Image (cartoon, rainbow, N blue to C red; front, side, top):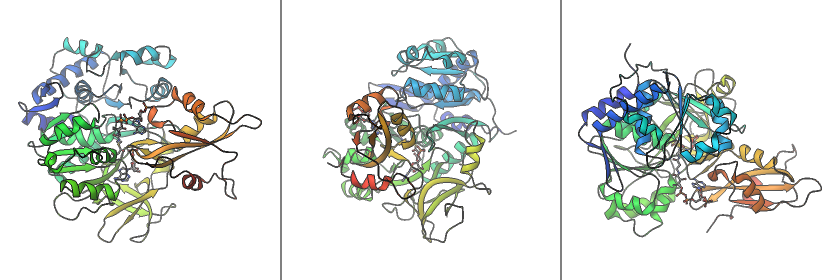
Length: 508
Ligand code: MLC
Ligand code: AMP
């Protein structure tokens, strides 16, 4: 059997750049590729000693650090399944993920571990080790005692490499099962399409618990043995300070609107930049145009999903990058536009984008019904994004058929927030909507009614009550109390009316 393990593929790039710098972090911390490879071996032995076997889940809820990248690589090397979680998730949210993913090992900060100890579900985990924001923790202490030699476990293309949770329209998150083939095919395609080489220097300021920062950005750099300017978060001034050394930058639209918001961001800072990628949320055409006017650079907007990796990209080498469009299906990836009942529509007509290819995930974790619902009989995955496709194949995303809010690149499903608000004392009913937001693209807002014979709920009380239960990025930034919600003849809440009533809420 040829080994299809993603680690093996990335390792070829890392090995060829053994003496080159892999990571540079503020404060002078650097790590070479040979050191990264040896750390991956050390952590693989550490996790194996904790009982992790091929196919087991390793759940990681930790702040972004170079140590967590080493652990990610170790999990791949072991043939286990990497299961990263947004660091903003509360203990209440974590309880669900642990019960669902049943990890063998959980890596988490010391503070969060203490909060978790009381949860009955935590008892099923073989080992809970700590990992702090500075990369230290009990897992690192254990790793120092291990050898750095660990043979990579061979995987088939269909074996799982990662389990990534995406929130669902029904309120509960679903684990997307991502295979080695998904990741290898996507990184090879992107590396070629976007012209990566070991001369590249990537400015990495995205979180590494989602597809964009973990797969798109990290994989393209590692595959090529490129240098990574490592930012633990997006800090505008730190990013501007490193920009003159970068050849590639990747970000969500909020990164670019924040950069354009300061006169300190100039063409001079971008003189080495050859590739600027935007995605995870719609990039406003005006941001694309303003970026070009300021820097002379045309942002390459691409489109993707957790379940599919990258699906389309604007052209890097030849062809126009058109503001407001997401470009063409990547090589090997097939897209079509269909009606809600699955009929393929004529060119130019708006409909739901469906996608098929080696990039498309293996289904939802322990959820065959949901998996079946989201796939057509001929294997196309139903994205839930509304799009048009021109004669030449160029795709434009025009909306969403799924009830989803994307705030600063993070997905928020209204149903989950509505369920939490409806469970609060004194609430009649809640409708959660996304409203235009100058920084986050969309901002979360809720419109609520009082329960029968109860006093009008108070905005601050609702936000405070949700605070302990939901991650901060999901919290409504405003709550409006109304006598009743607008409904159509069928009794369905008219969210479009609410969006129009409150559309100026977050405007400057
Ligand atoms: C932080 N906050 C947010 C938020 N991020 N609220 C709504 N939406 C967000 N995205 C909260 C904070 O908790 C804080 O609350 C307040 O808003 C202000 O925070 P901030 O300091 O301004 O935010 P910051 O830490 O700078 O974070 C903003 C950000 C970050 C845009 C840099 O959200 C981010 O890195 N986003 C990237 C998400 C991403 O990687 N998506 C890829 C998904 S993959 P308070 O109460 O403390 O004031 C995918 C597939 C694909 O979609 O195609 O790529
Ligand atoms: P996630 O579930 O976090 O992977 O988010 C995937 C969703 O992000 C997609 O279904 C789209 O709705 C959205 N998305 C990603 N890239 C783009 C883009 N370039 N333009 C518009 N929407 C995007």
